[in-house]
Length: 431
Image 1 (cartoon, rainbow, N blue to C red):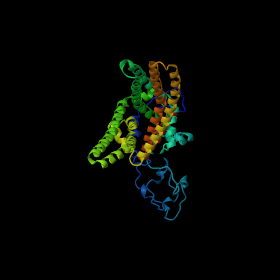
Image 2: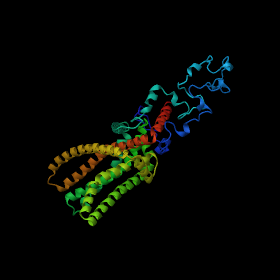
Image 3: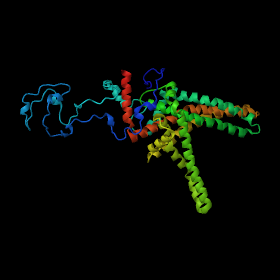
Image 4: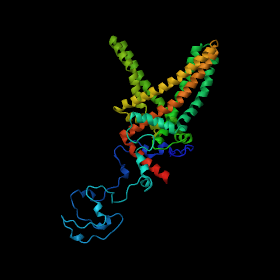
């Protein structure tokens, strides 16, 4: 369990593997309403027969139906007839028909350790509907974006700090390789060398994004319960899921690329065989290329969260993402994902514009030295990728994680498990 936000910011949480939490089990609450099947006490025999307006014959040992007490029956109990109102025993007047009272039958269900969270002060109980960065109910667009930003602000070490660490590890060898391109390929022109050098940090940044997404998803899952974690706890929880994350990323890419490739080849074949009609069909397929690619991406985008939190494999993660985005929810996930990408793109354009203005000034100083211009361009490209990735990747990964939580709350009642987990953690903190 991570550290509560109200505690000292200098300490890191002792992270627990997300897959060890029972409430992440798929579809656990989907058919159980507000109670899980294994936590609903069976009703006593005959309980369902006591309906409003009926007076059943008193059971044997009537006095034992009080809370742990066995008072003697009231005077004249045996003379009670239908239509007569005997003098009620002490406390009986509080049990009126139509009024809700704690059940008096059998042991009471507990959440966590018996009696712990029931003793929480009122301010803690009120907070149970939003113990962390989001309310535990279906989320709105504003709450998803705000929750992602709150997670970054409350967990800077495990979000921005982790991004800086991972990007630095990958960008250093990328920078060294890019600077050696003119030496390795002396026949390339400057523009070609710059284009090739620009592809290197992009590819490595994609690998960094896959790893960072898994880390941020875990951090968001803890932040939703009001806890925060550090780099060590996050690494301990997610390190075993890095290979499955890479696997699901590769499978998702192949799935999208394979579908698009089949459609394009089918359109080209139709254009050859059908003539003008086939050419029209090919144009329509090309126009549908981008929307179809985005739709497929939305259907597969929640697989990484399932891999990290549910401890699913790559194929199971794809199936879970497909199931969670059925129907109209696929377009909602797509719209929010695209909007988050637009926001991230605006930030990237701002950083790129500032660095572009800077490099333009410097290029004026070294306009006669082609080699210096190349090295300067490579350094600026890597610096831009580093700065943008350190902020954009935690934000977009946080949005994806909250979309996963939102879909599970809407479809599977995950808020039931999250509320109980928050109750248990609040009680444990006060123990």
